[in-house]
Amino acid sequence: MNSQHEISIAAEPYQLFQQWYDEAKKGAEGVNKHEPDAVALATSTSDGKPSLRFVLFKGITRQLFVFHTNYDSRKGKELLANPHAALAFHWSVPERQVRIEGSVSKLTDAESLAYWNSRPFESQISALASSQSEAIVSRESLEKRVQELREKYREKGTAPRPPHWGGFGISPERIEFWEARSNRLHDRVSYVKSGSGWKAARLSP
Ligand SMILES: Cc1cc2nc3c(=O)[nH]c(=O)nc-3n(C[C@H](O)[C@H](O)[C@H](O)COP(=O)(O)O)c2cc1C
Image (cartoon, rainbow, N blue to C red):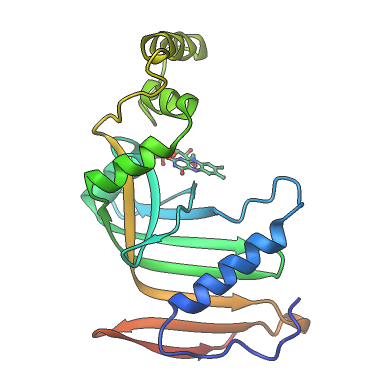
């Protein structure tokens, strides 16, 4: 529970997001398995049904909320067909939620490559070996493929980024901040994009 009175309303939401994200990371320090970067990502199926999974938030680039994935995965295909998504963060210390909705675009090749090159070798190999979201014959066949790729690139110590692996950025049209309060009388503030600025409103919990 948070002691301060209410979420203050500002001209734009990025500063508050950054403050809350920093505080969530601080709150998670020393807490086993707590992952403040885990964020639920909602996409839509071609027949308009929701489709949801967690990804790892990789920060804000060019005001886009970024994550990396396989463009040929289920989420990748859904986003390329319908480039709209929603994110939901939940942080337990302090107890807060941030919801983000917006349009989605691929990061540039240079941005995706820079992140790929920063990943550990074994993570690169796993991404290369996995046709994410496709059915596989067996776990064993996947591990065999990992072993082959590991041997192929071991000497170089790095593996090439496949064109189907990269980042997406969500350009927010709406960001909502929620903070727990006593007696379930929580505090909510929403920001909705309005022209080049934002329109903020306090919402009933
Ligand atoms: C905490 C957490 C973080 C994850 N981060 C990612 C990620 O950054 N990128 C990714 O492609 N999958 C990530 N996954 C796996 C996804 O949840 C999902 O299983 C996978 O991407 C396939 O989803 P899809 O079939 O909807 O495309 C993560 C899973 C968890 C539980």
